[in-house]
Length: 357
Image 1 (cartoon, rainbow, N blue to C red):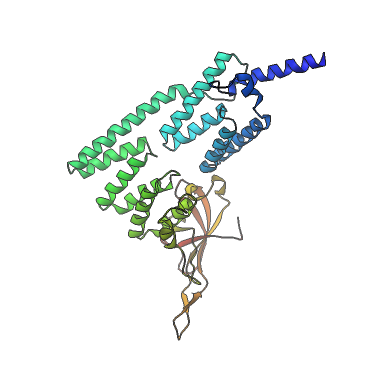
Image 2: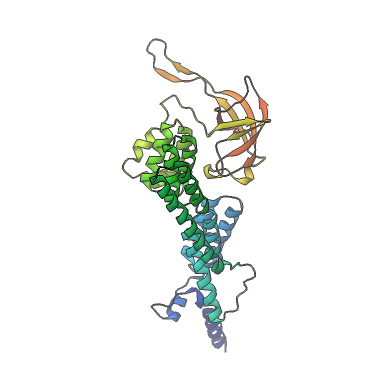
């Protein structure tokens, strides 16, 4: 009797989990029996971790966690949905459509097999969103092609307007970002062009060729403070590629003469400052009203009087104590809590105040 009950329970569990297994080769029974239960539990944990990262604005960590969950359980609908949502918000519409198509496919599969699963905690708007995304992608492509035609005709302003339309509709399309950045720089709107180069170079799948181009433009515009965090961010992907060491060497400090800064003051207004660091450089929403920073200017270089050999620097000169109040994608606002000496201004450097975090 006990053996009969055990067999029935095993059959029941096999039926419940059968929807998670593709049926294109070996028998369904064989595949169900090879699913390790702990993988499903680990996948759910990875999904929950990803969801928490997403809510806290840590989008790269959220993406990694969702991908980890799907690598262990490819049919985890929640992970597909939220990864698609994340990609949609980043403008990666092709990737978003792929995962939402998986949501639709798996939802239909569940219905066909009539498995009694609770779906009250899931969202399934994927099917209606897919054609809408495709319409957005077409509108972006049309605007981009209009921009190219205007550019060929020498109508630079009109071309920029159309390229911006395409980029706004499809923010993470490499081709749109690159063309917009190049066109702005060719028009001598260097600062605005660099902004779009930075958006392109911040993408996790940016090509090394586009990366080199963007870094070269930033260095030529004396915006090494924007280039440095991007070089650090992409070093894991490009470290082994020919030519990357030449780029990274440009950002190595002179021996015994380092000036370490995480950002710069962009603008000052009404007792606050805007700084050039945000979520893409590692800040989090939880840093608001909790992260203390310090504005400073580097101490003067110290050298040996007779030989002129560099010995290092005098201590940095503190200018202000700051408290982060608002974190955005690429910038943040900070309250000026205290000022010293001549005070803080645009161009001053920023470092973490290590005693308060």
